Figure: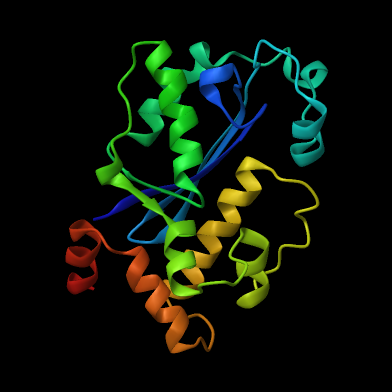
Length: 198
């Protein structure tokens, strides 16, 4: 059995080492690449103002966030939810960097790269020169992202999970190129072992 956590984060900016902070985590659980219906969603008080540029991306203001728990208060819950699952994210270097940055400040265990799949890196290798953000991939493969007027951690994680489900189980007629993308996503030995048992 392969347990994957497809997740996304929203933040106050781009650099956790310069004081930027998480404001939202959203995650979708997959078992053997199929969504289980189990999700994790948490808004987070960043204990600082949200810059206008960041607000324009996700629409989360400090006034909205200030009554939610801080990352210190939810870190253990998040780690327990993730457990030993494979972590899947679109631009994982950004999301893992923020999570590990704030976990390190709390002396909590950090996520290691051997358990992380970055679908953005894979898509760039597969479609060199093309746009490969989440919106572009949804358009390419006919995934409805009409609700995505702003970035949202849970919505974005759900869309990425839909792309994985769409590809893995061939729910529609898909190109060999997209099937190749799926195989590349499944690059870890754990993924290959499970696929061979299906």
